[in-house]
Amino acid sequence: MALTDSDISQLENTAEEIRETIISMLVAAGSGHTAGPLGMADIFTAFYFHILKHDPLHPDDADRDRLILSNGHIVPVRYAAMAHAGYFDVLECATLRQFGSRLQGHPERLRLPGLETTSGPLGEGLSQASGMAYAFRMDEKKNRVYCLMSDGEQDEGNIWEAVMFAGKYRLSNLTAVMDRNNIQIDGMTEDVMSLEPIADKYRAFNWHVIEVDGHNVRQFIEAIDEAKAVVEKPTIIIAHTIPGKGVPEIEGDYRWHGKPPTKEEAQRFLKEIRTMNGKVTQEYA
Amino acid sequence: MLNKEAYLSAKIFADDIEQKATRDGFGTGVVEAGTTDARVVVLSADLKESTRAEVFEKAFPDRFVEMGVAEQNMATVAAGMALANKIPFITSYAAFNPGRNYEQIRTTIALNHAAVKICGMHAGVSVGPDGATHQMLEDIGLMRMLPGMTVIVPGDATEAHKAVIAAAKTDGPVYIRFGRSATPVFTTPETPFTIGKALRLFDPINPEVALLSTGALSYNALLAAQMLHEQGVGAIVLHIPTVKPLDTEAVLEVAKQVPAVVTIEEHQAHGGFGSAIAECLAQSHPLPMRILGVQDQFGQSGTPEELLRHYELDSESIVKAAKSLLAL
Image (tube, rainbow over all chains, first blue to last red; front, top):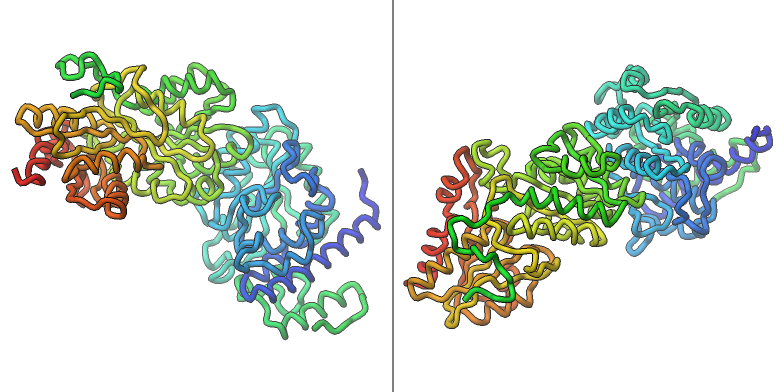
């Protein structure tokens, strides 16, 4: 189904709402990661509002597509997207990281339906997604498996074991997405442990590689469609993103990887997000 | 003296008692589990012959997955399979599975409560000539600390067969420990086996000490009890294949019959089976005990017999420990 310009701008507006929710929930939590979730808001919106075959009211439906989040620390964007998609009330987002909340600091499958797996320790999502894809193929099921990873976690050896496995078994029902935002906790990825030429590395392991602008929703959705058409190998979409996207003053700054905004900063950030599309500026208390 | 309800081997104290490795019980058990349940799959990390995973491969080639030498990926792929309606058995040497892939098991299997059955072969010093790197002595401790993990150490090949079938039917993660070398098959198909249940092997009229053991060393405990009996000392033998959840009822029942207990395991004395018994007794019925295991050391090359003697896990050493505990 071809996407109209109006479909795209609707998705962009949803992404903006999700960014606002992320800022609000991080302020309420007083801890957590800011840059990654903001950078992945467009991609999560594309998944939950266009790509995934899913039903928020029946999160255990056996035929649903699976979205595995490997780098669990960016889970605020997943919680926000799930809430906006109707898995739970957006108000619950304010409980992020609090005692008794279903919205744990890192996602826990058994606490919140729809999470698909428990993650946080890096480098483990691609293997789990590969296991699911392998199992679905054994059962001749048509649902697809998507795995979101960070670029920093490519340092983990476990990832490359999974890359070999999925390549060897030609898991074409698996699509990985790498958030190529170039930052990790200790600095820029190329300084901490250089990854380039990352696309060539995946190609060498028998993967189909597509590179896109991770903030261009149309381009991303087209890449997903291309991945579905590749039947002989798994696909990785390397999505170039800007960490902290939407809040110009923190964009691209690795120091925002692992900290939340203060209340004052949040007021400023929300204002910046809200003025992006020419929306009316309003004070936010 | 022998517990009749245990239906032990007719050749129990005979020199020609059948000898078989517990890993052989994995091979036959997993094929039977796979026959009853099509969700059973077996993953191998380049060790299908020595883990006996190849027995399953021959029976169900489409449900056997070769992972290569990649135990971390094996655990995490299995977690994904379990979340997609499979019952994966992951197989390698215990030193690597769960040794190498411990954090993957913790996060993606235990915390996820994924129905992965972790099979650690070649555990203990009885691996023999391969030496310390391959003689896993910390796996029971690692696995029993994980919330929701069932831990089984079968006593012989027949019990291992039953344990594998029971594990496939159990919801959630299970760790099963197997040995490399052939050991006496002291149980029979009629011997009861239920996950979480201990089994009395030897029940003297006037018990003075209890020998609590897990794994193949339960046979050495039985030999020790027979030797003690000949020396006029009554020793109960309680074989405890399920280290977790522990059959505390059976343990306390035995503890209340005797003034002291000895535990026996082919594992570090720290943190393993003996520790589990000590945790139970110290909180409910404290009494003098001796924990026989490897005492804060690594293993080394040698024959299984030499090594079990060196680390004082043979029947003579068990007799000695029991008598010294009773100050006889």
